[in-house]
Length: 409
Image (cartoon, rainbow, N blue to C red; front, side):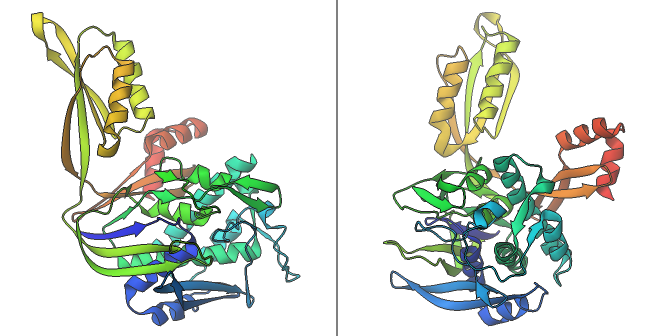
């Protein structure tokens, strides 16, 4: 199975991910030429050699009206926290005609690009993730979130470039390491914010991440959103036969090489290791077992299910099974001990085959719906999220089948 592995030991930013993937293509200039002719307004993309800690890689520069965006922060980092307008008031280079653009404006820019529909859909979905996070942080609806034009075009170029490269490389699965966010603080117009910045922290929910000793913003909202959209799972690099390695360099210099490293190669099937934890219960009520299951799902279990079993002394009982990440099996065993009456838990490590999964947002006449897409192992399928379908059916006073039909259109 064609596998892309992203090593995010120094975080992730849009320019670093672009540069790392670009090196995997084997023809840097051809891609740069294409990026500069797809119709990004007033944008020019440049790829240049960069050396960090003696390692040669690629650094991407994005010029908007001939100027490169300056970092908004004063702390070390990638200098790409350039989203919601309030972060932008201290950039110090207003060209006199820049205005703030809405999510709809960005979608319009994306829709007018000379790229495939798949690239446009991916780019819109990534921006939707960013806008939702900013909306939550600032307590305003997504429709009211505005981006600063210079920062926006810089970020749009990064997002579209990564989506275009993903289409060109066409991996069947994308895996990434846990994400190093950096630590300390970052300065913006509001004052001093903690790292990861609030929007980045929201986007990284459900993704393994850590702070580490490096001071500064290593993972940006753009980088986090791109990882969230494309990566199907996070963990160690699997056993794979590597065909190409790419180094995407950041702007800043640290004691360790400031880069995203990308590996492209073949991996056996779509396999990953999981752990099954089981216990037999004959002295708990249905309500209490239901509560235990809810807590296990809330902790991030892949699956939790029950089966009726016959136990000693001819007692009817329940077999509780939990599928979880192998590296977190001990933690899930503790949750099982806490919320059930069991005195012992059986553990079994096993492999499972998985399809690459991602969620896209689809616009229908009734409203937006998330669609879960799965692919790999010569299979491709899509399924709209039931919760979204049910919510829109109630809101619009129509049947769930009417909503499903609208999604298919």
